[in-house]
Every structure is written in structure tokens, then in C-alpha cells.
Length: 376
Image (tube, rainbow, N blue to C red; front, side, top):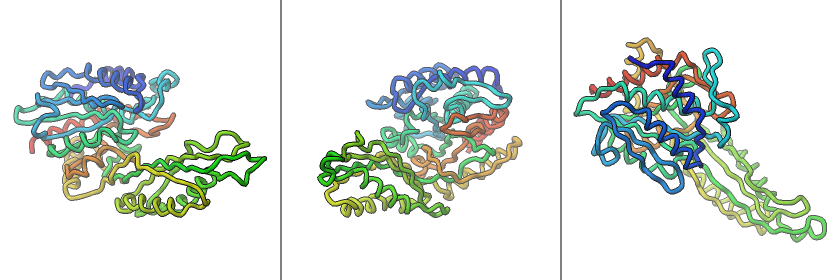
């Protein structure tokens, strides 16, 4: 095992200090070019899959046909984008404090992606075996453009590994909630709030009524469904009855049928508004299916537990509410395990961190897991 921590942290510093928000195609593509430059294994070639509105998906594979390959023994999936807007890296650059590496995206998903590329550089793959590392450009915004391509690549793969971070206590991920994200727009009637308020129909009041109604649907139990709503628009001036309002809403659950039924529930609310004269439109803008345990995934978990035992890494599992592309991969019946990156926490916050002393153990776990799967 030849990972050099000094070189790794140097490359990670460069990576973290490159902004890559999901909605900035140019910046994500610059990151993709940087990652291509780190590939040194002559067995591997790269391919960029282009999209009109988001950055490229980057493929690295020892199969010369890359995206046109008939099959892969292992698909490894990570993502290059972060939730942080442009300018974050300049204001909060990569730093090291004792055992913590910090910076925007350091654990979600930049160090896991870097570990995967370092791992490819160390592999010597038999001619009869094939691996593809797929790096998504818009995972954080829902993979709306790239979802179908990810699923097509998963359909022709025997096994899949997702290089999201291990949890703060070191657990890998065995289950993830599904997600549905909706925009809901409310259309009322504007009027002067002093001269003729009786002529107005407030889109904000209707919006607020929806938010309170939906909030009452929250069920925090393991089998429940949870909602989070943000207001994206709600009036212009305080002396005008607001004629428009908008919200962005997400729902999460381990139970797919609860998420699927939301469109029907929203349709019922739309047809029975709280305020007469209001018009409402809603649209689903992103979704991740629930990623659940099944026999194939449990087989993968047992294999990783065996690898962990052999190298002295304690393997434990956790169900989480966050989403990843493991959900799309699992939806086409490809066996998949998630959380194979280094250990860290504070995802999507100013406190995001990675444990430096977890790099080598989790890198070794990824490498030995790949070698084990290639032997099957």
C-alpha cells in the first residue's frame, strides 16, 4: 500500500480550494480536469459526458470503451460538486487543525473522491476484469440530468461502491431515506394594502396555510415521513397585498409509497385552497428513491465486514436520512455499499471536517474491497 499522506493532503488542499457548486458548470468542469491530471495508472483512460446545463460527468476506466463498455465488474461512484457557492473556498480555504482537515467539501465528497483516484493508481487489474469510477457533477442538487446515465452504468455492473464519507463514528451506510423535492407556486391578486385591501387575494397567506398544513404531516418515527420548507418568494412591498409566493419543499422517508403519494396530496390541496380565488401550481424537481437493505446488499456488507476484520478496521452500519447516488444504483438492482470514504462530519456546514488518521485505514478498506470483488 503506497499512499503518501503528504502528497494526499497536498492534492486535497488544491481540490478543496477549488469551488465547485452544482450550478456552476465551468467550475465543476475545472475540477474534472484537475482530477484527470491526477490519474497516473496507464491501464486507465478518461471520458467526459457532456450536459447542456450542468458540468460533465467524469469517467475513469480500464475498459477502453468506457461509457460504451458492455459490462463492468465494479462501478465506483462519487461526486465533484458541493453545496457551497462560489467564493467559499477563498473565504474558508483548506486548513489543518491537529487531526482535522477542514474546508468546503473536504469530506463531502472531495477526500472520498481523491481516495478513489489514488486507489485506481495503485491497482493492477487483470485483462479480464473492468472497473469504472463515475464522478457525478450534480449530486448535491439531485442528479436530475445525470440520474439516467448513472442508472444505465449501474445496470451493466456486477457490484457498486459509493465513496460518500463514513459517518462521524466510523459507520458505513446501509440505508438511506428517499427524497422528493417540489416547487409550489401560489398566484393571488395584488391590491393596495391601505386603500383597497378587500380587493386583494394574498398568495402569502395561502402559502403559509400550506406550510402549516404540511408541517402537521411530519412523522419523526423510523417509519414516518419528514418535511422541510423554505420560502423562495413572498411579496414585494409591505403596502401591497402579495399576488405571488413560492416555496421549495423536500420530503424524506424510508418508505417509497409515502413519497409517491405526495403528488396526490398536493393535488387535493390545490383543488381545495384555503383562500377563494387562489391558483396553485406544483412540480417535482428532484427525487432519490429510498436505498434499503436487501439480500444482495447484505451480501456486500458481509464481504466488507470480512475485509475489515482482515485489516483491523471495525465495520459498523448506520441508517441515515441524507441521499446519495447509491439510491439510483440500488433502484436498478445493482448490489451497492455506501460510505467508503474517510471518516468525517459537519457536512454542508462551516464545521465540515475529515479525520486525517482515518485516511489510510479507509483507503486500505476501499482498496482491499475492490481487490476482493475483482477476485469473485
